Length: 277
Image 1 (cartoon, rainbow, N blue to C red):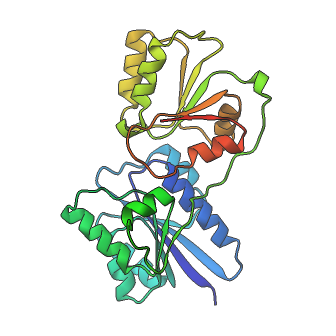
Image 2 (image 1 turned 180 degrees about the vertical axis):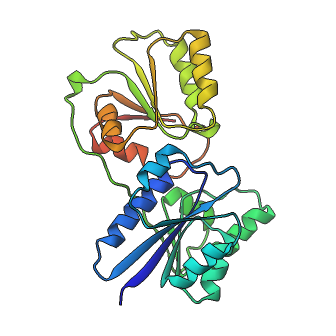
Image 3 (image 1 turned 120 degrees about the horizontal axis):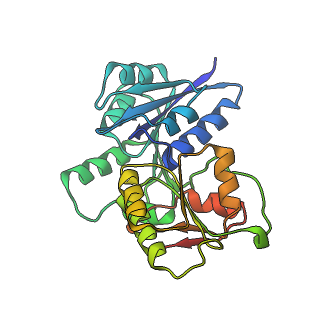
């Protein structure tokens, strides 16, 4: 009899770092002959399924559940032998414990210092888990600053890393890859590029990814007539690897405290250095 693993991940509907991690874990579990895996995408408020995520989930055993504990989520947890949750979500943890399923939580986001009711609930949910896997020492220290719990450890996130190599002398410009939200700094990057006195032919800027700021930024680029910027939006894995390895620098202009993301790992795997704020 196979061990049934369900990987539960809250999502806004776009393909990003957590989704890449979930797919990599699912692929690793699937390779074990005595294990079966199912992905549960838990819609959060504002969810809109983007072509990027829809494409990456093709061929996967995946279900979508609504915010809160709907019937599909409950039945999926009941079906499983092991629950692997992404970030501390109360309803998933509650039903995992109700049905006596081993619960592991990978925590991707740092814990804010403010002790709001929501943050206290997240801490309580994390404490319920049998295993807590933090994606960086920084994230771990914000959740467990003084004493590390038994069952807690640092487990860096993984993804399917791209392959390839371009000689440094043949590379050009900068590349950005990420979700187009304020915290990721894509708007700041465009502003900085607009005022930089660069040779636009030698130092183009390629923007990959998608998100709520995309239309606004595209409008600003056109209105300000900023040359040298190429907006690709979502691209498949081969195109992503091609763009990264042909760039001189990967730019990661985050303007808030974040855990250790996958973008820098992917770039360094291709031999491309990173500028990280």
